[in-house]
Amino acid sequence: MGDFMDKKFAGDPTELRAPFIYKDEEAIDKPFRMDQMRRLFAYMTLFPRLGWASLAATIGGIAVSLIAPYIIGVTINAAIAKHDVGRLVGYGVFLGALYIANFVASRLRIRYTNWLGQSVIRHLRGQLFSHVQALSFDFFDKRPAGSVLVRIMNDVNSLQDLFTNGVISSITNLFTLIGIVIIMLSLDWKLALITMIIVPIMLLLSTKLREMMRRSWQVVRVRLSRINAHLNESIQGVRVTEAYVRQAENQTFFQGMNADYLDKFRRAVGLNAIFGPVVDFTGSIGSALLFWFGVHMLGAGGGLSVGMLIAFANYTGNFWTPISQLGQVYNQLLVAMASSERIFQYLDTIPSVASGAEAENLPVLSGEVRFENVAFAYDTKKVALTDVNFHVLPGQTIALVGHTGAGKSTVINLLARFYEPTSGVITMDGHDICKMNLHSLRAQVGIVLQDTFIFSGTIMDNIRYGRPDASDEEVMQAAREVFADEFIRELENGYHTEVRERGSRLSMGQRQLISFARAILADPRILILDEATASIDTHTEHMIQQGLKVLLQGRTSFVVAHRLSTIRESDQILVFADGRIVERGTHGLLMGTKGYYQNLVEAQYRFMA
Image 1: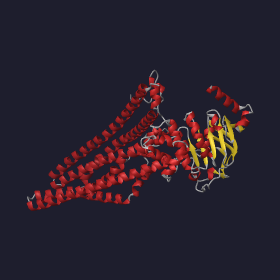
Image 2: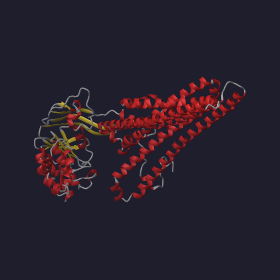
Image 3: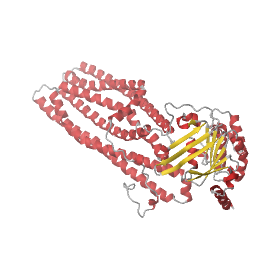
Image 4: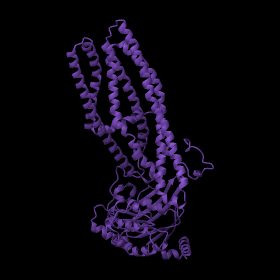
């Protein structure tokens, strides 16, 4: 099952679903990069007080751990060997005080390092979320929502152990190791060298293991990302799955992905599990060498006392412990490396649509819009618009019609500057929108989509989303203008009714009416209605036409509609085909030309008949 994602699904029902492999989710095969780790650790400098408090507690604990073995050796030589009870009690009290100090230092270190780690994680997740929200539409076009969710949640969470324990632990172990080496060399350099002769062998073995572990954890992160992407899609498309009775096939596919992730995770954990025993085994060899030569030196009168040999033995035991723990920290670094590369890949993504350094705020618009030789392509193989030209006067209503894929939605995406034109210029009141501040532009452009999005919360909150500072009365007035007030008041809590995720308790028509109220409340200078009445029944549509007249009055409006009866009164109709404007004019004028538009209208009437 481990190769489930890599095999061809010949004869298997899951072959109807393609593996979730995306370019940005491929396994990252890069060497360990210190510059990236420095960038990651730089986040700790944002919280200097917690950092210094953690470091102070850590240094205190290191000092105690280095002093204690030496005091034990002195106690054996000066008190136990000479049967001096008074000195034994004195040394015992001193050692007790050291261990109490170590306990206090450890508690403080754990507290401050956890605060520090959680503060870093909170800041990093907030920064990543903020950056992702600022990215352009083309970024999301290429990535499933589940993949983005993994970056913000799972990848950031995987750094938690590193920040809450790994960094301070590595500092502790590194300084402890250096201190032990210095003390051992000062006590007996020959015995110290004999003890540490096994270190090169351990380093040789661990280097290969570390490389294998790095690759394994990178694969684990990719597999988890694929599971989340599939899970998100499955939840979003659950109605389609049930409608086509695809639950069994979907479950089989998910179980395959799940088993594949488990297999890769077991491999990574298995490699981690080998590292500790390797260090322990080499450490036991070093300890055996210590006692072999130490006992020989005692018998040969080499100047080594029993107390110092015991102290040496304690230092030797403490010597291998930080090496083993540093290996575990390195494992955390490998996991962090895979996650941080993916996080920084997002953070380093520059929005393709953004306000330039010299961008100016767009003044209050009158509503004049001009497209001059505008062309656009979503990619090199998909040209959406070619040489589009039109001029819209303030307050006019412009209808965009044409078959699916003709270029209508691309026009409104460019108007709202969700994308930049490949060539040509788009101006509003004579201002090139590509040179204007993005926020000042979108604050004056309102959009009502066919698939309107309703957020979790109350109806009042959703309508107010168009203008957060609006009063309750202004919200209700906006709802009345589009005839949404009646059905809202019939709900158990009226405007304060919780609509649940994506407005699941509301009908499609009700959700659309709320989006109309949201747009009216925002009071944009330019209004875009993208199939805005497609989800509303004929009776409801007739009701909101009066509200639309209020909404459209005094505003430049662009209306995309397949239901051609809704655009008869437009000031100008632009007919699109294959990314070009093939006809333009009023409804009456176009109906007399016996051209593309007339064919669309007659075909629709025949279909309705």
